[in-house]
Amino acid sequence: PPFTKPIHAELGCVTPYIILPGNWSDEDLDFQARQCVSGKFHNAGHNCVALEVLILPENWHLRSKFMERIKHYLGQSQNRVAWYPHSQKSYDRFSAKFPEAKRFGAFSEDTGQSPWLLAEGLTPETADGSAENWCGVMQEVRIKSRSLSDYVEQVAAFCNDKLWGDLSCAVFVDPKTQKHSKKEVDFLIQSLKYGSVAVNVPTTIVFAVPNLTWGAFPGNTVYDIRSGNACVHNCACLQNTQKSVLYAPWKAPIYPVWNFDNVNLPSSAKCMVKFFAFQNLANFAALAMQALLGAP
Image 1: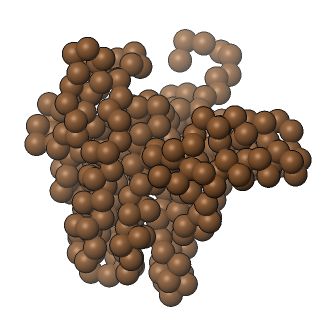
Image 2: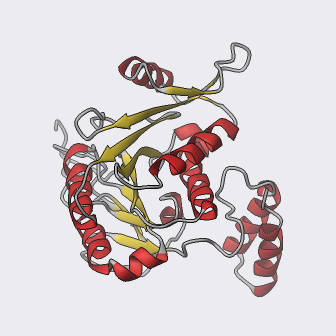
Image 3: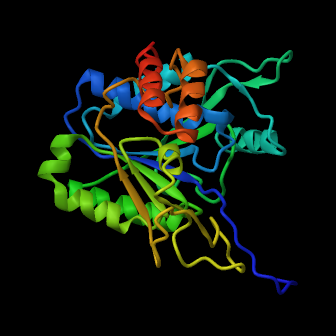
């Protein structure tokens, strides 16, 4: 590079959300689909943590039902404007590459709102992980596997080698699978070369916890910057960190304030900011009360 000053950066990536197969109930399928759609919805997809690629095992007996819930909530969520500079070009480029992508909503000449786009049924070979789309589009990638062990190995290789960037990713795994397939789950989380791994929550939540590290997986340089070469947050000032892993409950005890269809977001957000600024019992109680009113 034609400069001598040190450069530090935090950039985005082609963020994967990884589904591990299990015997999910209808309630589980619905709740986790809402979380995944929320990972795409925030800020119209103009977000370094936005869901870009949804990875599922092709032979999971609940894959079709889960994708139906994903499509249902993409249809329920408000269409957004691709307002970020050059994002409309990215949207059009994705649409041209995947002309069969399913559209949710219609383009509005009056408001500029664009339908969400979902390219379904892709394989690691047909998916496009070369660049972050940074807009309201996503891909569903199905991976053929002989076993859970084979699946997690293929997923790790696909994410690390085929998807551009290494900032953050998410893994959704039910409690029984976590317990009975601990070896495979741990292998996946350890193998993913991302600066942050969110388990059972959107990647946004890792960024919201300042004690955790936030930044790309170590090793990037200014000659190949990828998701950056710096680490922020890390309030504990830990040295030589590799990644942060946030384990969340399979289902939050109260309806998540980060879900796109939370009906009490304005009041919850105000209380959340106040609690972050002044952390005391009274402000926590006020936040909890508003959060309880968020379920649709």
